[in-house]
Length: 400
Length: 239
Image (cartoon, rainbow over all chains, first blue to last red; front, side, top):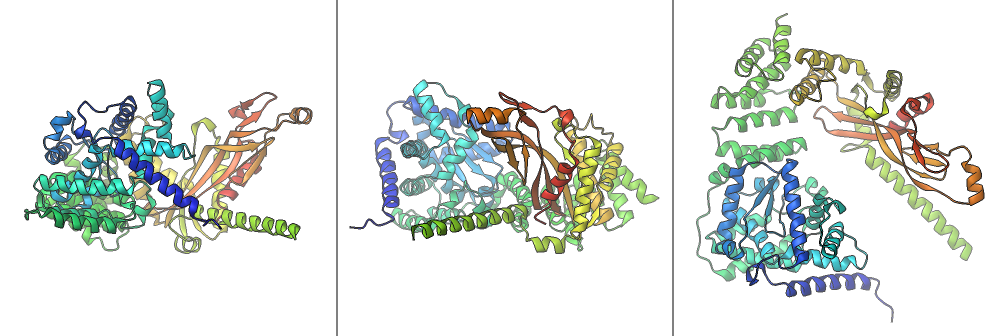
């Protein structure tokens, strides 16, 4: 009998799924373990690698350093976890990565990473809670550890993964040598490879339960997961995306089924206003990142949300002006750019950067008088700015 | 028949590899834009002064030669070119205004950022160019096999005198990676979007002695005019 050509692939897929499932069955959920976690030297080492990465990204400025915003996210995680925080004896931690990709993940020690791209896509706290609930579920079920173990099995048939090498050496020698592999690479590999479909489904379902238990409207999980769908080419180019999961439609279908089954009474949907107030800084960082990547439409959309919710914040209006400047550096229509800077000044007459850019935009159009007025105001506000001598030269040369 | 099959597979392999290398080169050199669009829409380019890794100790003569060669070749391709001196002068003017020198620039990041931002904007205001060409000489790893290193479109012999005889006697072959210099030419649009980037190999920075690889003294770099000029030709070859 002729062997079908796809048989080896089928066997490999089946084998991988089986090894993940069998490992998943072997490891108890963290909240059900009677003693402290991590409960093996190997798992401990993997936690340590994760912690090392968290330390690294803080030092290199890859995450937003805003304790207040982190505290709000951590409070949300604590609300979703309820008593489990105390039962497990864990420290709730959230890191906000400066990355416009719509993504979130959880470290094996329960620290959750959310990217600015995700925060910018979500509309309210309930949607954010849906994503966090999903990640918490990955942690409680030790999915990162299980996935790593599963990959370790695969590596035996030739698929090398640096993390596994690091962890394997650590497990054998008892010492952790992160130099064997960059800690950053460790998490890129882990997040890129993603979880198996079964683990994702479990996290979706359990995350939904956590969402409802914390008093949020379960239907908000649907737009939250919809936001994870790949939206543009840029997303496609980035390997480490949660949204790269190919079966978002079937996951949404399953979620809808689960929501029906839960029969939760309707809950109020938290307002967008308070969401933007809480995570506005992340939205601005994300808009800046979008501008760097020439994703003007997305940057404008985010800035519009920000300025609508926080019209009295000058930086948002200033950023709108910057978005126009980056998109149309030569105009020819300078009106929207000028209007945005003027709005920032109207909100806060002492917002120096808006005065400077207003002056630059006028100078570009050879409107010397208003340019000089704006530059003078800038210099009066920040006489010691690094570029103050250049601005003075602009004024002097326009008068000649 | 067997011979024909083997011949056919050879041809197919050759075709396949040719296709692959073509696809790779065209994909890599032009970013976010097609070659024709770049040549039609970005007619007026400003050349930024060449930037080189400090270890390479590039003399002014070699720097000028590289810059002039790039200007010459871009003009030949039909571009209107603003020579590097224009941008250099604007940068110098901004440096003088804020009191930045080569010695202080690394220490004062705020002033440096201000100078770079205002220099760029001033250049755009004064000359209304369509794009900027940046030139950078980098140190890269060049793969070598026996006596020859090949990288970024060029190759160079690295064999030490007397090695040939040694190889003949022992029958040993060698391979690895050595340091070499390369010119990277990039073209950016006014929004600072990268449109083009390609490398042209210059020269190896190491050589083999009888026992190991050794670094060539920096004083011996930049002697081969032909190689210097050829790197500009290679870096602009996809255009």
